[in-house]
Length: 161
Image 1 (cartoon, rainbow, N blue to C red):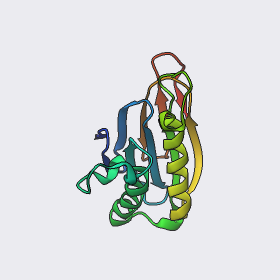
Image 2: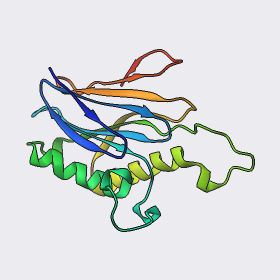
Image 3: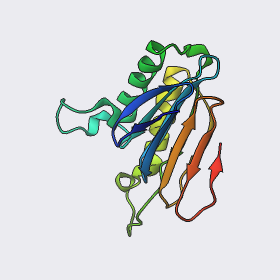
């Protein structure tokens, strides 16, 4: 079994028997798409909610929720997944730092989660589980044999959703 790694502002796919993992989720969100029949999975490490925040048009699609998830959907379908069977799981979206007089702009983690859910809704993909929020980092791994999403943190007990 190989572990396919997904870096920050990156996306990738894995097929059975491999798993797919990303580390260092703070305010970022690890979004997975999984087809339980073909056992094809995809993951995006989303950093920001909207590509309208990009300073120029030359950016990585996987960085933004609104561009990462349509691209991830294309990738998993090209790898053999069926859109009708796809389900999504999310983890991350922490508020890593507190600011006095917190403005909406500084709520990056919660805004990332909201933007990912909105993008998935537009794509017609159901979110079946999530572990979002808090103020801690996460490492996540999705196993293609059964779609379990393992979440590890430095301070909390390991969780599987």
